[in-house]
Image (cartoon, rainbow, N blue to C red; front, side, top):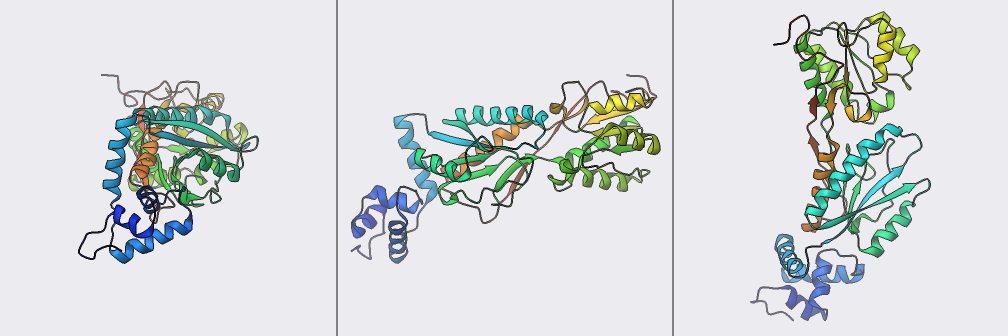
Length: 349
């Protein structure tokens, strides 16, 4: 037994329990190599003798050991859902996000591997087995079009983050664009250019999956400025006929939306973009045609998301967080041919 006058250590715990110091250390870090019975036994004994595990010190020692051996620290998983309903245009966004995660992980000594689940991919149960067998403990969940459910992963083994708004099954830390702030900035910019009748066009799924942050920012700014209200156009599926009926009836002088195809629909109604009317794109990465609007910076989202996963690993923070937090990345304004670069009616300086 440990001497009560001696401060308990991992070595004294190991001696008391008849285990190796490595097993005790891994049990205190909730490592999956140690079975649940042994982990509980170690933790009970640690409480009895007053041992307090210091994850920071453990992480620093592990870092020293790793650098003695190699700069390579392990493999991380980037998990993507195969969703038939997801728009194909989202592919470029996901590629840039994955590239940011991969580049930053490599700088920090990790390799990122992509895994697909859903139709033609792994089941979540199979993914759990693969990750556990290969010792992959960090999981980055890529953005999903619908509402993902990853509760079947055994999260006691993993540190995870979601590269979009907070998911609820389970609730993890997340990194995503600041859509509300972006919309407020868009409205300020359009007002500076001289537009007074902005109209917002979204598909229902585009706003619902973001918990209505786009339209919340739009309506909040419009109300604060006393701008003449134009009804939002938010159909299940955005189609030419419905858009043109809305455009002719409400006569917005600038349209805010996702698809550059809207410019053609406006032109067919007699608009001359950007001379008589303007178009602002909510995600320029979705369109091959150049537009004025915002870059959601998916590369930077990937960078910050993978840093969050790695930080949890370094701090031995595995499992579903008690308080899931959201980190937002600001969007970037990009000039383009669908809006003037100087206020309407004024010559360029």
